[in-house]
Image (cartoon, rainbow, N blue to C red; front, side):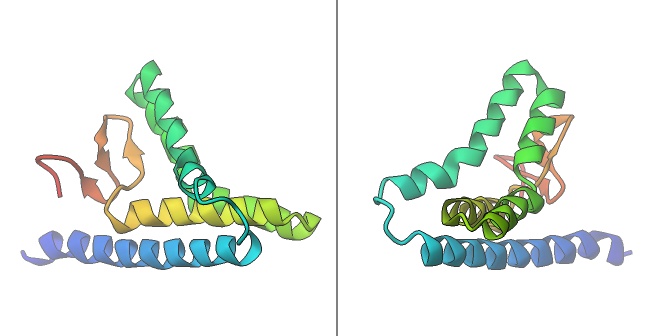
Length: 131
């Protein structure tokens, strides 16, 4: 009886811990290859994936698709790998910051969105009446 209640909490905890580790690794990658950026570029670039929330202007289903596409670990990873392949440190750093953003979101409990609403995520409900 307790297992169905505890299992999602344990799974969510592991995903949050994983998110924190990915965020730290992403920051480390970006700092290692682009230490000379001006201070204002870091928060601006770090928050860029959240522009995907503009999809919600077209409704929750479109919003969930655009948000989720921009909040996959794979997106930042592909960008960083492309940077490694082409020798472009800018792409490596942007991929690292993308990973950092997504990892930080996961660490604080913002998961991939459900088409049924922004506050319903794969890590549980967020917001006032959420977790």
